[in-house]
Length: 169
Image 1 (cartoon, helix red, strand yellow):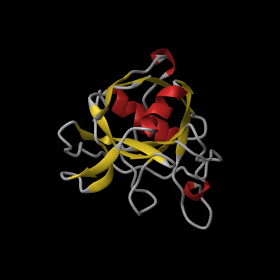
Image 2 (tube, one colour):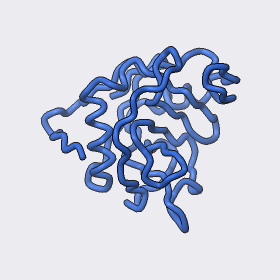
Image 3 (cartoon, helix red, strand yellow):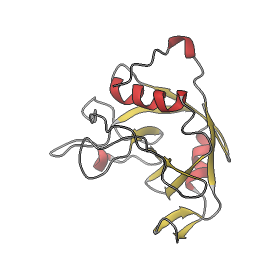
């Protein structure tokens, strides 16, 4: 469950299809590292991205990059959550994004895609509100798609901890 400044989202993770990615995400959640971070990128017809910066726009410490599981059969469809990465296919660490539209260009093909590892199951109205926030240039980050009013990820909790065993790579 993600508690944001606009309301709560409940995400169901697919450990069967994205074990490495889900384990990485849950390890970060269990350590409280996403708490009080921000969503720093909002593109209303594309993605809402977070998990990488604190409220002072300082980068959070990256862990070890993980293997890209984009070939797991899950698609970058509206309402799914996927790992953000750099240009290199196996460069994802902690940042994630919600697809706020169907984004087949992010699926694997001739090149590596972006690994989907779950989907929103409650709080679609919150995702709709997130993608509608006003964005603009942010001097500290140097990007034009940063929410003008900070969009905060207050807390992330594991709703069924009894089914989670953290196998971190």
